[in-house]
Image 1 (tube, rainbow, N blue to C red):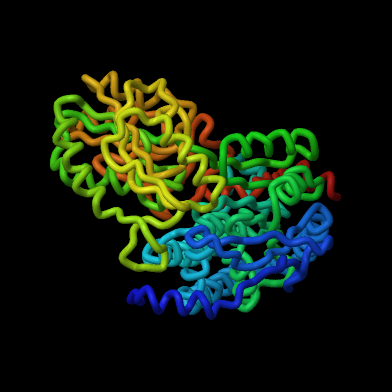
Image 2 (image 1 turned 60 degrees about the vertical axis):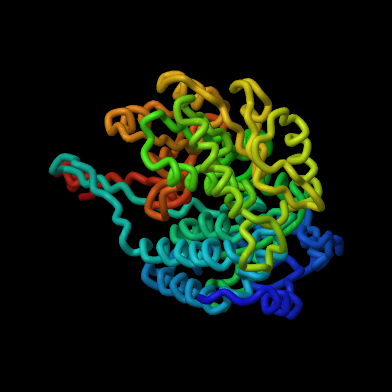
Length: 498
């Protein structure tokens, strides 16, 4: 899809019809309380719409409708090929509405239209289609039992699932969760982030148009205390999948323990290292990967390369090349397709990032922040104990730590509460494999920055999360229960029947 001009995108934004109400049981409805909250364009400060501010009563209603849908089998017991066909139609309708969704996502989140058009929306569609195609291709198992028995191991949908989304990739994280959850046959109650509810609400309507039965996908917007906690504590929700901060993720463990011991899958924060050794080849290419990893999506990315751990022998040259590539990460109007960094998602988050900038004593590149926008920033820090090395900033700030050898680099890389992603740059194959094994992270890239693709599992070690993985066939496992069916074929069994 060819990109439009800034003026054309602004015109489209002005013509959008924005969804404002919860989507429950196949239709839009206001919050039971009648309350609303403002969703704001972070690039302009303009209030875009007043969204239904749901609460526990709305969660109860959504869960009851999701339970009805699950128990009567309108989706959970539909033939796998029929579920696949509906999700394929869903992906096609998302494609048809891609530009509308891209513009809506940009104005609601501050993300650049360039990223929305070229990355987020295409990958969202691909994710739905990929999991749809897997529905009728995942086989159950027969265990190696004796001739007198047949033992089947089958997957069954886990039931009613609560999905709690982050604000940094609203559509893509929605797809990462509803793709495998719907493929498994579950019914869903989704809480979008309060900052970025619009596209999730619109997608529910598109899913219904594709033929998804009512009650299967329910969207309940609102605050964490008003909607997130009631989902976490609900006695009739079988499982919660959460993506967001580590502090909030831990609360869902408490909610589960204090309610019905529902399963909880957590994908949380990161403080991801990029390790560059003295033998790394093509430092210009290395710099491109480092900059992309640090500044993509304004650094509002749990897998962002926020710590550069670099060997002293190549540090000076690498920093020169990083400075060159950082210039291309310009800041400005997210609806300008030439812009690579938009606004941070909210005033609250902007102030948080600025607070970290205030702690930077040695700024090598950037450092300017104004009116919700923060430019690409690189800071030197004396060691891994500095707050800029320990805490997740979630902004376009790259902290640089100098090291003198491989073992020191790996030790510092692993010296963190998190373990989501890591990158290692080296020309030595043995060191690359050894280092990738030693790095304590769920995804380790060698001589590149990335998260893998839809076919590879994504999730973390330590306080970056546990309980399951997004993406790949492994993502389906977290939305299913394993059941063993043991059938006795022995002669004694026949005699008992007689």
